[in-house]
Image (cartoon, rainbow, N blue to C red; front, side):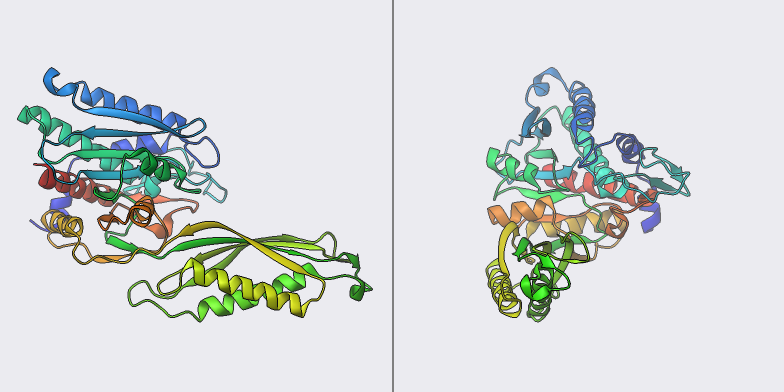
Length: 405
């Protein structure tokens, strides 16, 4: 049986469920996760209710108000042994619906065309969420058929706020839902790869204060935007000069947002820049902080009268590959069995819930595998191919079967 045959042999439960999930607005900011969380809870409760009475009370659904009015949930099939629990973690929120969609593609329409599912969250990550839910439901069926609990426990966590500050996964860690021992897989879009390493993510807000004056007499003021330009240039040069990592590549920096000034004919007395750095070892947040402080000092020298300050608003460490990870080996085995060959191993260029768990808890069994392509996420006309969803459903189901039974 070839790869395509193996994938096609899988059912369409996740494909159909993904379409339903895409039609639920869970944009962040926007509608947030209330409606989709209630839908998922009901979907899980319906399947748990089919268990024999002796087992029904053993499978749990827990809810957690991670942020005011924003609830995440965890469903668990407990294990009878002492092996680390398998956890699939999937975020329920999407980015905003956004503009630029084709006139005939509704971001919440769940349109299927040319064997692709279109809509906001189609690949990031409602198809991955659907695949994980179906894998969990399949293990519920196997538990009912066996008449007993599996040896290894299995949970699915549906998190909030991943598309913003990732406070949902942080609350899950604080509550004890997940920590250093579990084997944790998120279902982000990975282009068919198993992605087991992440660049770090450090955010700065840099503010420059100057002195206002008429633009015809700039010497009477202090140009905060000019000082910020000096600062930005020095930060960019210093970050790009940092050593590259053998696997993660170079550190990068993006100056994603800037505000300042009043009118073209007024010397600006304030400027603020939001900075996104993706850092790799040996560059750390501490190194980046020294770079920012030095750049502010140099800018103050170049534009007298200006004074800079900064705040660190995000500090996520880089996650390096652990070649001895048993979860990675198990995922590669599952992809080999389903697809005929093991998945390629790569890095995740963004930052995920599993990266937060790895960084906060020192957990070396945290990684990403899911349907779709990150290149299509957060864009108009977002879509996921049908075969990708079938593949992900088959691999996630196979992985859970192998590890739990």
